[in-house]
Length: 469
Image 1 (cartoon, helix red, strand yellow):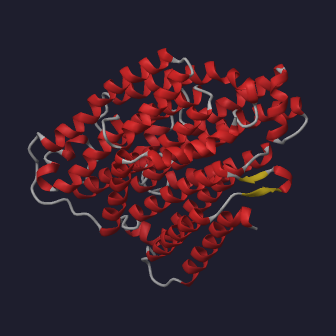
Image 2 (cartoon, rainbow, N blue to C red):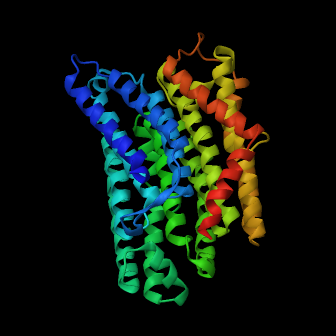
Image 3 (cartoon, rainbow, N blue to C red):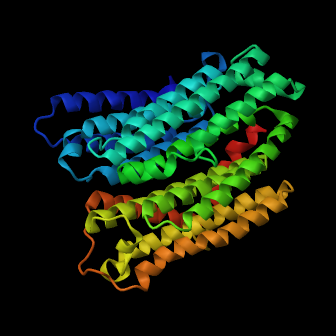
């Protein structure tokens, strides 16, 4: 029972939200979101005291250090996302708030199962449980044509990625004669071409899930059209789940055969870093800019993955923690400005430092973290990832990443220029709902604390990554 404590907790919370909606009266049901957020906060606290447990279902489901680290990350990100979304405007959202939160919790349940999956079938089912609610949520504002188009694109690309992944995993099953990832890992050093082909094909499916280039085409439109608090969560939690699944499939127990994936991951990291940063440069919509920026950050995480080592894996995990606070915080500030100005264009940020200095300072901290400037969380994240890649001999990849980091500073500092140098087009403070302000504050604290004192999270990541190798 201990192994499933968090999954059972989310399942129970789903039922509570469902029956709360049935008992609700009136058109405004946003209070149901408060129930969901409070429940996720309680589960986040519970996750801190849950300890590793023996494998369940014959080794299909594991509750080890990596699973617990990832689940704490998912729960924390979900709480911030739900908190930021409690004040979403509009009569439609007020009426359908329970539907929104049930879908988020359903996707969260899929992430939790995915972090513990050590079987091909459970892995695929968990991926779909995580993904299907995301397709619905991306088109939540279904009366808007742009939202429907973005959701359709997300669904079609996601369906293709699932098909490609299933096709690749079928080859893996055919070669290994089992769905157990532990047995597959032991079979890989034999070099069966069919097994390697299956894993390469499945890697393509993973590329869609984490939005690496050239499998990123759904990202900009989906991010622009979907509700911003949901996008803030979408940009981090499912990506983190995808990376944890990558570690499970391609690293855990593989041994010396792990070197097979170094050139593949290095090539994908190169393409993703270059494409993400270059496509972000001309963007004038803040959400699209952060979308392409996010693609570039996936590339930086793939640099750590390409190191194919315990330190590389640990630094990717630390990067994901830093990215949760920096990226979610940036999206939530964009949401606050867009609600006030009625626009997500970068011009809406003009003179923000004069109108709302604390909000502008928060956005500046998030941009500095995403840009890798000392001493905020993103600086250590990039430094540690590059350090791990250099230790693996990938000096050219480190050099490329460092150069493109400088390129990324251009579009991050362009937003800072709008806020601090250009005069405001209108006067008056940007109104910020209390729940949204609290979510932004949590992200600021995460960015600053990890920037000043990253060691506890780094050591925790190293502890959970070491057993994989």
